[in-house]
Image (cartoon, rainbow, N blue to C red; front, side, top):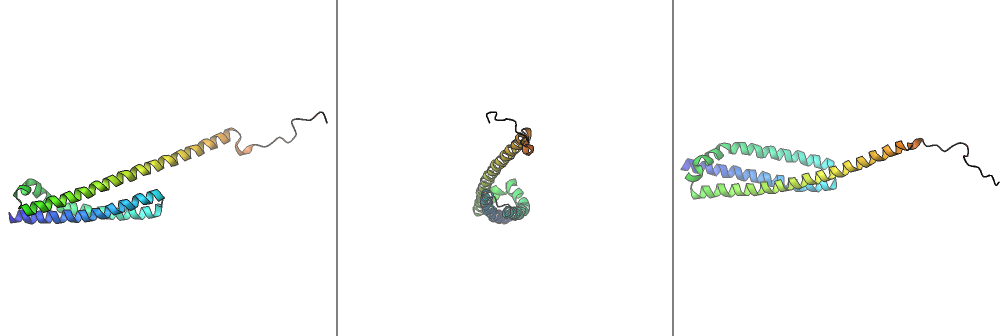
Length: 155
């Protein structure tokens, strides 16, 4: 049982480390939404780079947790002491809550970007239609006649 508890404690530690990284990702996601709203592209690119670095760190922690997770799921859950069981469950629930918040923010950011994309696409279409109409009706090539077409006979 000691080996199970030791693995469970390490699993809980890794889950808590993932939760810490995910809290940082959540903060970056909040800032990302603000930068999208304000159309600050350069800052947004830098932020996305930081987020990717954090996501890579989170992935590495998940890989480290894999053997402990497998042991936990293969019966360690039932064999662990109540304290070890509670630590893993608490860490897992914390991580799950943070991940849910990240997903919600990312979905909102994605929707906002799609809306902005639609607006820009609409503007481009209007500009293209305007150019086509301008060209169809003579565009910038219209020149008034050089001789008068109408004359005033009354004099």
